Length: 110
Image 1 (tube, helix red, strand yellow):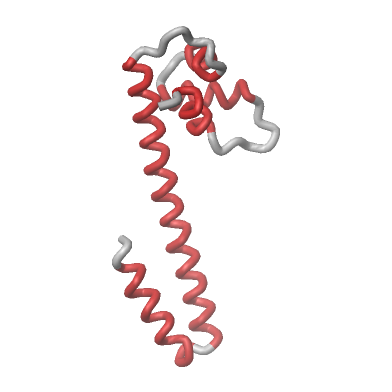
Image 2 (cartoon, helix red, strand yellow):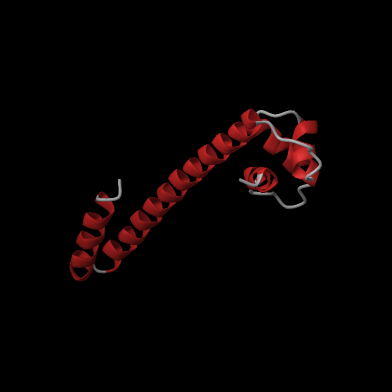
């Protein structure tokens, strides 16, 4: 695992005008590392990275990825509900087979 790359991924998403310092602070907080240690790893200046540090970074990135996936799934479900509502409003009888199909498909992904 590339520790510097993982720290960069932890810092995402960046807000407009965000500075690298803020991204490093964010990564350090999430990975439970000190700012200075995170800074050294971020820029590839760390002579050696302890196994415990790699584990913290890895676990933090895994947790972030799971959270991002849950958020994306929730957003997709909300979007589907909105689209379903629009279909029902336009012509519920015409769109009923489509709505029923989408409902059965989305139930399997919960």
